[in-house]
Image 1 (tube, rainbow, N blue to C red):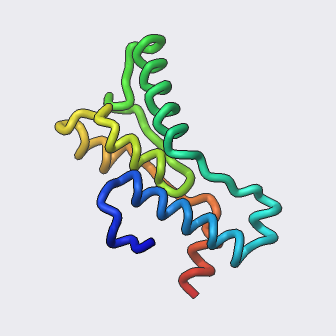
Image 2: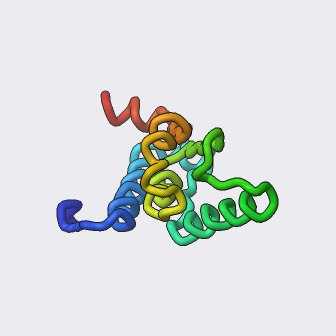
Image 3: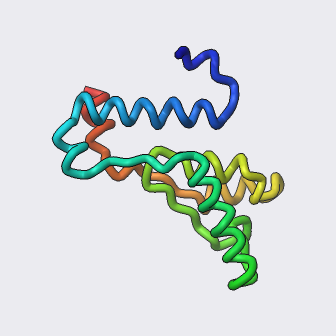
Length: 117
């Protein structure tokens, strides 16, 4: 499958997850076995994001879109990508949220170091 033939965010995110999976299994098999690297299916990510939004609203009278609610994605960016496409954060609040309160960092940085060598 060619990446250039994928024109939607869900498909692009699947490509990233497949790349990570193949990379770790083939290049770092012992680390994959030791760490049990697993990726959350997109449908589950969507459920988690909407569930968190529901709980924030119903129990805390808050929202993922509100100031001072920080979001952390310690993996491939699937949670952030799906959040940004979920429309939970209104368009007018995206610049602030995106630049100040959304954080991402791959936990297994060895993949990047190995790939860049």
